[in-house]
Amino acid sequence: MEDPYIWMENLEDERVLKVVDEENKRFREFVGGLSDELFPEVWEYYSMPTLHAARLTEKGVIAMFKERERQVIRWLGGDVIIDSKRLEDELGDEVLLQGFTADGKGRFLAYSFSIGGADEGITRIIDLETGELIDEMKPSVWNVTFLEDGYYFSRFYRHGETPDGVKAPAVRLFWKNGNGEKMVFGEGLGSGYFLGLRKSTDGKWAMVTVTFGWNRADIYIGPIEEPEKWQKVYSAEVPVEPIDIINGRLYVLTREGTGRGKVIAVEGENITEVIPEDEFPLEWAVIADGKILAGRLVHASYRLEVYSLDGEKLEEITFDRLGSAYPTDADGKKVLIRYESFTVPYRLYEFNGGLNLLDGNEVGGEFTVSEDFAASKDGTKVHYFMVKGKRDEKKAWVFGYGGFNISLTPRFFPQAIPFIKRGGTFVMANLRGGSEYGEEWHRAGMRENKQNVFDDFIAVLGKLKAEGYRIAAWGRSNGGLLVSATLTQRPDVMDAALIGYPVIDMMRFHKLYIGSVWVPEYGNPDDPKDREFLLEYSPYHNVDPEKSYPPTLIYTGLHDDRVHPAHALKFFMKLREIAAPVYLRVETKSGHMGASPETRARELTDLAAFVIKTLGL
Image (cartoon, rainbow, N blue to C red; front, side, top):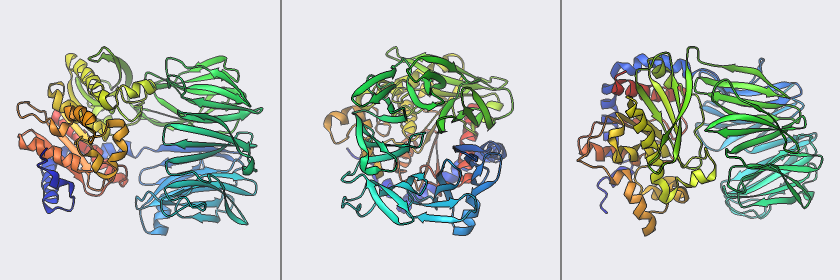
């Protein structure tokens, strides 16, 4: 099969850089002054503080936030401890904070950061009283777990070999104190294995999870100070994670069964089911004050459930609007919960018997978040959210993904707010391929079942069309595949398409960058059976000169090292060839995830401008 644009896979090719330069100018002319007009508004919402993580200590809560042009780690309601801008002044380069942990007494803080967008970073440990630097480790380590006289940490070897002679990539657990460091766990574990250490909330037990890829897991437990005594107590061929150890009983969240999640208790040889599987997935569980607090995903938004340690359901807690809720820390008495919704960048709640709001912010104005269902081609019910402001101009901006076991739950999209305030409706669809309804839902959108995902999206768009909406369909990464496949199959169900950082050439995705790791999800183009179903929907191979395509924006970043920009560039050329109204926007400074705040906000503004212009809002 001849590929006329294979030369575009070479990003150094002068012809590629010429196309990028010309098309960026042409797109600028198309959105014109509208983007500049919208930018202050998008920047205002983009700059609203968002919470990344929070930890409990005896001296108060420590939290990490993204603010306007910096990230900070601070005492909640108090002093800043770490400021990314100060680190940039010290190091002379762009700094991205990656995460932090603190010891329960509030004496020490370990934080990690990367320089200039690199994946490998630096971990520093400081004394919270004096601010003094106690340790610095390069490349960054994770899983720092403090004890009285030292700390454990995990080191991921990307190069070379581990102390026990296993070639990278591999991970090992270490203990470090005043006498130096020593490897304490992970001997002999090869590539593909990951490990995580957690301390039980009473501080006495180590709970270690060893996973192989995303598929199987072993749990080891033992006295926290004696790693030589840690023993394997549970294994499963599916994801499992330890919750806590209470009175010698290990509580575990497991995906065994239909994959929708249940809680079991392990005591020696005895295994008891505590919270059985339900129609809706159980996503997480923690223990506080002798009760189990669990998060359940009900039609893609969260409700909290409280159980006794024996599994008796005590109460259900719902929020004032549909949202996402995850625990960020628990100490046996209290739990910190991070909440987010379409118009709420974050709220931080504390649970100890009841739910108390500690902190948060939200967008002012009148908004309603509702939900509905469309019937897919095979009769499957497909759920979607709708976010509206005061008025409804019958223009819908519809976001979808449908893949890799990822759930789309309510979250804050800063660029959607100006659109909604002008009378637009923001829609988010929950398609097969995600994990909104457990593993079976994911498998129904994988490999030879991928067409189900496009049919689900077509059903949602078609229903909105029938209700009189003009529609802009939007997806990013695997969602870019979703929108480009829907565009080539049924251009009639949309009035505009936005395709970001996409996977589009299904015959060559496995040959570009890290694409080969997606073979389990999509199938293998080198296998004749898989090739058949991939070719059937591959957007790059299904552009039809007889079809009439709506205005389409394809956007990517020249430095995306996850999804090769050639997917976007080649698809653009195919559409241009048949004189479709297609635009290309290539960010010359960013990768798949990373970019400076202003670069990201400008890109989001351009998306909003394209939608507002093409839908005639």
